[in-house]
Length: 120
Image (tube, rainbow, N blue to C red; front, side, top):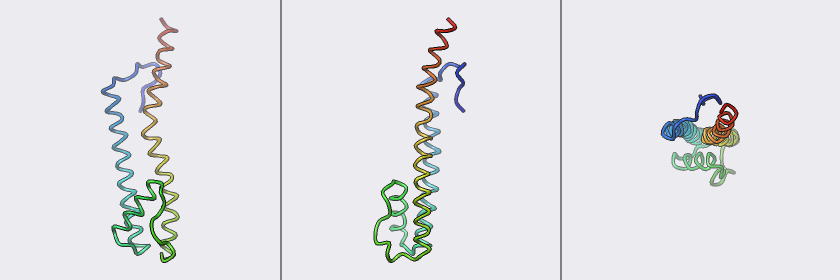
């Protein structure tokens, strides 16, 4: 997906396009995760759609569930537990998708300058 060390760094315009592509992946992952979480909390935890959306959003944002979980059915507690673990993985994946192109560009520029000096 990224250029090799033997090719010059891409232009700023292409880099911006690459970042927009990564952002599109992030938005898609977040939207699907939010829909799945809302559906799970609605069906398994017997929450109204707005509360289910709030809980899914809070877990995906790293804040934790909202409200009294003592009255939640067992299936809802199981779902909330596994969705919290899933949300942690989504956070790591999203962070990687957004930072990988930036780190690659920095490291690629460093190696590209180095190879130009060695060849020239």
